[in-house]
Length: 270
Ligand SMILES: NC(=O)c1ccc[n+]([C@@H]2O[C@H](COP(=O)([O-])OP(=O)(O)OC[C@H]3O[C@@H](n4cnc5c(N)ncnc54)[C@H](O)[C@@H]3O)[C@@H](O)[C@H]2O)c1
Image 1: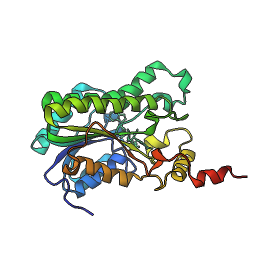
Image 2 (image 1 turned 120 degrees about the vertical axis):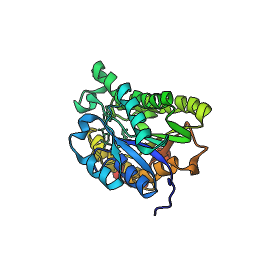
Image 3 (image 1 turned 135 degrees about the horizontal axis):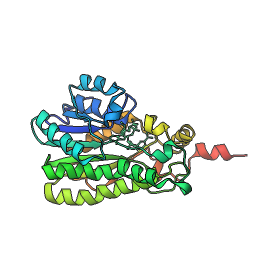
Image 4 (image 1 turned 90 degrees about the vertical axis):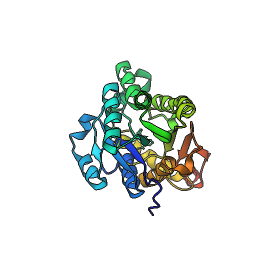
């Protein structure tokens, strides 16, 4: 169902680790819709080599960058504009990692060095990306920046740990930077609050599988897949959403607006 929605557009897509990654699906769809883009990930994630397959499939150049490192991000934007032949029109931030989650440290006993790392990788990197682009004036007028979030930014989720705080900050950065980038360059900044999705980052959360099933039963449309998330991101990169900015947009099959479902009630029936 390609409609050339991104024909003539250039972009940067971060976070494609393997074919389950949401960013992987976004890259495949962006390619189908006629965009050209560079791919980026942390140098350490490249060792797995999976991203080379995606680069080959989409005709993209890979530019490694640790999203916490301003120098590497500056290089990412300058090399991307050079490689793609002009400023970019869209940027996907699809990055998250918490050492506290990885090491199963409970929320009330967080390791603060790890906490700072979670915030830096999962939230501050969004600011750093846009700041690197801003200083180089690397995004075209009317461009679109999208970050991926989760509803634990608004409500307590017992298992989501310090990632909840990182997502709250990510969404706040979308509003604050969205204001400044909108005023200065008409660049849009939004976050997409996605359903639980079976990826490396998603499955790293304790009890993920049970929660995935719970969310499936709570959502009138069921959980939104990575593929449908990619479709939504394409719409946000396209000119069809040119007046949408500073928003956190739920892409969750109706989960966020559901109080309870018959399926969940049935599980508690006598
Ligand atoms: N999977 C879910 O259930 C779910 C739900 C809502 C939101 N999200 C968000 O979607 C985004 C993408 O995650 P995913 O589910 O596709 O998992 P994923 O594990 O495939 O992607 C996470 C990516 O972050 C990258 N990354 C980690 N540290 C980095 C760094 N320092 N610099 C650059 N890149 C770095 C990883 O290499 C990886 O490619 C994340 O922000 C995640 O929080 C995921």
